[in-house]
Length: 484
Image (cartoon, rainbow, N blue to C red):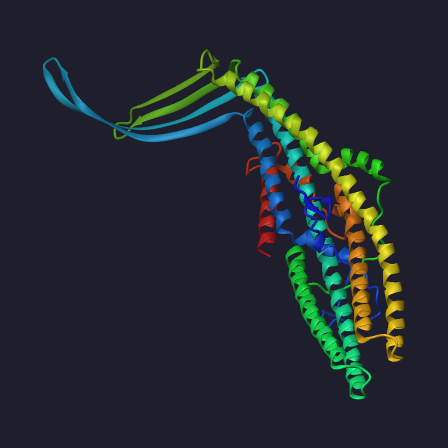
């Protein structure tokens, strides 16, 4: 499992800290300068749209359907194998009988049907079917894991737009205050209360604020593009997400839940089970098989009316004697792959538990940071207002006021980031536990049923059967959905 290490913490898959954004404004200031769509949009709506429009989910659903077909193909090995053949054959040559040589030529039309049916193979095919079923279950967990990453990315994109919008608003407010300071400095310079240096300092602060505002607007534009990529459309008028999601107990309780529910761990378990069955199948491949066979055919001589009708029916038993060590090597290879997957299960379990611990550490740090950040904003605002009044009385310099204004700006930005970190950390905890799915979040979407397609194909239906016709309708519907 991939991780990002930032600020000393290991963040779970797909979690980019710079995409952790504010859940609400901490300043009651005006609307954003960039145009925003009119309709109000909630986080739940964003997640629902991301779930329904994700190409990554479509890709992995198709991969799951491909894994379902592995079961059907394994099942087909227990069915009769019936083939037909037809050919036209021209025979020619010379024949000498009693000293007389004459030409021989015949044109025959040959048709036939052959049948083969596996009767017994010491469980080889059954082991292959069972292994394919375990692989299907593992692939379903891969789909769940991808679903969590899609939704976590949508959460980050949603909060990112709000965060950068808040920062644009804060910087607009800051620029307005600095322009007022510049005008005040110019007025005081005109009456000789301050020097040209004070005016220059104010002008430099205004220029810096303008550059910062331009950068914040650029960040907002980029976050909107990320929203488009994650959700499939541009953002609406994003509403505050509201309360943090409910988490399952403390850190140790969350680890216990993750061991039981996280898709990566469940997937690794199914992969081990499939590998163990593959070992048994490789061992069974070294034993004989019993099959039923039969053929019927006809040969017609074109132009003469002569014909032959033939048929064959019987049992065959065959098995390997020596194949250069191929079969025993296949058994050893299957054992090695099984052992590797057992080791992977051990590692995945520890990594998931570590992810839970890291996510909770970030969550607790974000809570503390938010509390401190709000206090910092309060204190910085009191200090700025006081310094501004003192400067008007001549007790403080312009530089003092500008420094205080910068401190207030920094405090406001830090508070926005802290609120962002807290919100993203809460959803990251859900992802590390395995509870960040459309079903767990109760999104207003049609939940994808991974068993639906499997139930249609698991018995390997043919197109002419009732089940096959139903499957054909499902495939056509899937094709129409992809075209939309």
